[in-house]
Image 1 (spheres, rainbow, N blue to C red):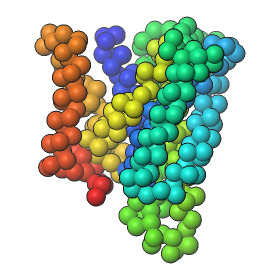
Image 2: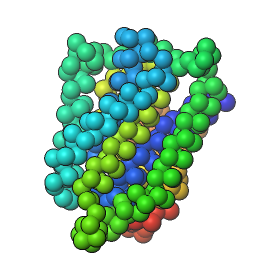
Image 3: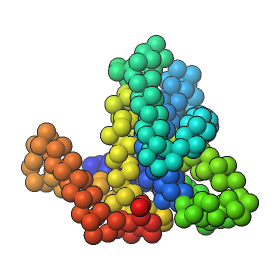
Amino acid sequence: MSYLLHILIMCCIYLILAQSLNLLVGYTGLLSMAHAAFYGLGAYISALLMVRAGWNFFATIPVAMVGAMILAVIVALPSLRLRGDYFLLATLAFQSIIFYLLYNWISFTRGPYGIAGIPKPEFLGFKITNVPEYFLMSALITGLIFLIVGTLCSSPFGRVLKSIREDEFVVEALGKNTRVFKIQAFMTAGGLAAVAGSLYAAYVAYIDPTSFTFDESVFILSIIIIGGTGNLKGPVVGTLLMLFLPELLRFLRVSDPVAANVRQIIYGALLVVLMRIRPQGILGDYQFD
């Protein structure tokens, strides 16, 4: 039972990441490879505040969100001047900068040694210590994130983002400042990814930079490409598929080193097949050109 709950907790964390990236990729049409950087930033802000300053977990979440949103603006301002592949490369460069900053700033982040002993969340004197309690908390936070993303995407703000995705020049001709909307989308996606990072840090109680690499950004992007972009259903399907399918290897008695390679083959094969027969993903509304 604990094993299943562990997978479900990880599903909650990746559902938040997938929905936040979907806001940027699926609704706004901005292909970003920097989502693991915002995820890691949220994890590190929460972990440092809890370990070094003794903050409560729930108090660190807004700070992590604000930190990620500020950084999102710093990234978005120069990057959004670029288009297509150049924008993608700019976000990739940002992902590398954050990773090497976390890895090499040893005096502050402890670099490759990571941050250990992250306290468990506590709410009104009740300490969340076991897996079922943590799953309940993760599910509630994930539900709240779904509500926020769903409300945003069905609002006039969400409709403008979809319009930018379809034809940015037409939206500009109608008098909308598309640059401001894209920056707001970037900020929102970064802030929500930071929430997932905070949840992850408190759950595993130890973080280091290797959990927030370029490969992690690729994995999050793969989730929404396979599940589908442009709606709320696609990332859910993608997350469940990408997290549960590799776990089946455990029941086939495949050794861990072999299973790790087989997982990569499964992810790659899924991407190739879907790009061939259904480019918009399993339940997606939007496909890249």
